[in-house]
Length: 231
Ligand SMILES: NC(=O)c1ccc[n+]([C@@H]2O[C@H](COP(=O)([O-])OP(=O)(O)OC[C@H]3O[C@@H](n4cnc5c(N)ncnc54)[C@H](OP(=O)(O)O)[C@@H]3O)[C@@H](O)[C@H]2O)c1
Image (cartoon, rainbow, N blue to C red; front, top):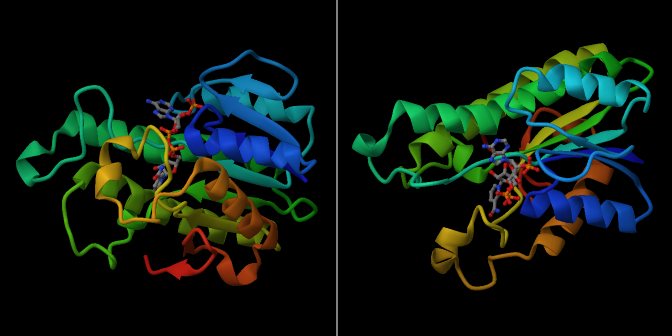
């Protein structure tokens, strides 16, 4: 398969790209970091100009069969996820919306011209279980939860549009499971024994699910094993 991995310097993104290459898939990557090459685009997907940059990069490489969009943010600098309402700031909410939602939108906009009746696509946006409104029994983490809920709605919309435009396409959001990366690092002490997964384990699981994606998962939020999480 020809697979595009965005956010390829991240813990899960890098592991997915490595595993796909090891499996013999043809992998294109996008990240803010690294050396530009025939298979790697250096670009910040939160910026509007990324739509043009990605379109140009993909133009002479033909349509991709599948996409993993692995960009996301939970904490950064002095900002940790909010424990209560009064910790919620517009700056941090906007930063979450930018990285957790807008970067996925820019990538989809860049790829949209390639998605056709003759070229359906499998699209996986890494989201999070805490973005499920139904599953939220704990509260807190306002910006992250709200931005992931918005991402989930984007994915449902995109699935409807691309399902009509390119039947056979499967568009999903997916919770990767708590994985040992920089993103989860400050919270790992609270993770139940055996529930913190290695990057390699997560990458292998997500790839297995992606390769088997079918109409029944289209437009859904999936758990790492491919089962459906209610929105
Ligand atoms: N790790 C977990 O336990 C866990 C659990 C649930 C959901 N997730 C989701 O899984 C995805 C991957 O997470 P991860 O654990 O691999 O996190 P990570 O190691 O922090 O990687 C996230 C990637 O997102 C992009 N990114 C982050 N901040 C950015 C910014 N300010 N501007 C532009 N791009 C930015 C970067 O891509 P580049 O550096 O390549 O540009 C970064 O490498 C995220 O969407 C996350 O929400 C992770």
